[in-house]
Length: 177
Image 1 (cartoon, rainbow, N blue to C red):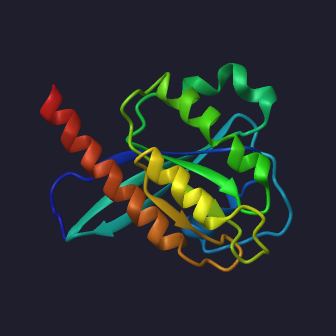
Image 2 (tube, rainbow, N blue to C red):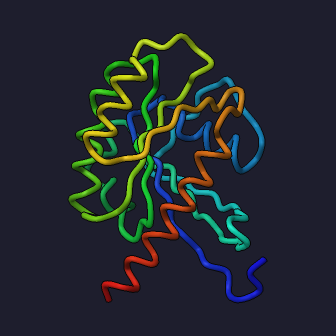
Image 3 (cartoon, one colour):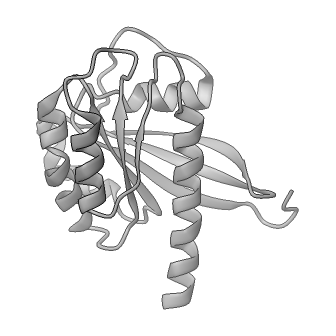
């Protein structure tokens, strides 16, 4: 384990309302899943220590409200992000179709931030084809992963991947400056 100063990386989860961003974060940070829907008002965040490649880092995980009524000030929360997850619900074609809008919104604030595409709710019957989502991700040069906050499937992989993207971004920022 790294015994030096603990690195902190800001990771943002963005996407339409009700795609499961809050549930993914709660599953990862607290090991819990709650069936009831809790509307995120503006932004919420949690932190979690992640052991990765013989280092421990702290993720500051930001849960950005997806409802349109929060769009006017959402961009204020993207600054300083080291990595962003574009989350969609595999049962909602609209949430998948809106990924481009989310990507554009975020890149207008943090142009070179690394992103990944996360299809959530794989415990339910998919309406959005995994092949279509994988193809969209590939066309945008973004990693792609399917998860379930309800069962916990691939949630650890998702956040470990975000930690890796964030660490790579920090190295890139040091090299550029």
